[in-house]
Image 1 (cartoon, rainbow, N blue to C red):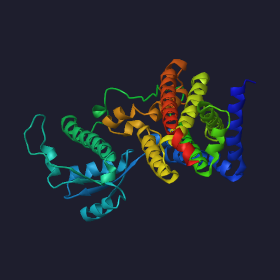
Image 2 (spheres, rainbow, N blue to C red):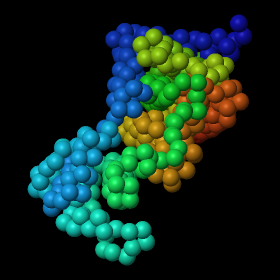
Image 3 (cartoon, helix red, strand yellow):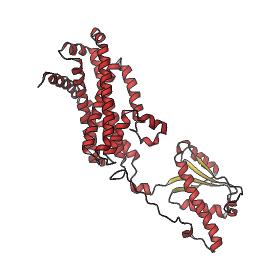
Length: 393
């Protein structure tokens, strides 16, 4: 074995021994991402069967009685899109304020004027109100669209009944059918694939942070001075610590995705080679993150506080917690400058999206580029601080 390789292995073995010395802490290092990923997957999982029958809970308020109003309310109560019940205006306002439920549709006085409606008419339009909780902004368009469809169908039946002498459901039916077909992957979206990818990435960053904090702790305890006394260049010392961190990170990836495969059907639907390359790049990124923390972190307490804030921020912006499309457009553009965004895109591509090697190579390249950048920054900073570190120790 070459001497330089022996030095790297010796340093890596030392860090591995420290990691496994506390068996309980080592077990938590594997259990925590599995538990987080499982919980997030259960929260966002929507089986296909239940999604098709999903109903929006709403309240219906009528401010005046009338035959058309009553028939529209009957249609709302019978709609497969709503879980509806009637309430007074005061009850609806109180329930919406507490989000039980968060949507209410108010049919106003004058709603019966729709009986006089003609195409292109300029008559005053009754103003239907939709009361909603501030956190139900996404449900409001759903309620508005479904109510508009139901009310227009009822109005069309009323008008056609006057022409044909009877109500005609077939006459107001759309002249086409709609079939929703997912095309992004070989199987429907599995929220557990997203959660296991995201939580694994986030925890690897935290593991990189912990390895960097260990480096800072070693400086305070004088371990750094003993390493510097050994006939080992600085780059080999850093490489040995990076190998140890990346090796443990790779074991965490294997453990997490193995559990996801056995319990939640998280599979590699795309390129296996792409998954392996991306996993190696992500583990190397975790190791480089640790070295960068050690290089610029200062004290251990200050470094921990700043790193937690940064990791949580880039995890959220990178789509590790929830799909990135839920973020504003400008934030999605900003997130393209983060390694977490590209790593998450790559993992989703090779899991549930079933993409090939060429599709994941850009993600591998970007993550590897960030890894190299972090390593160079850490090496430059530690070389700059070498005289001061030696005096401190």
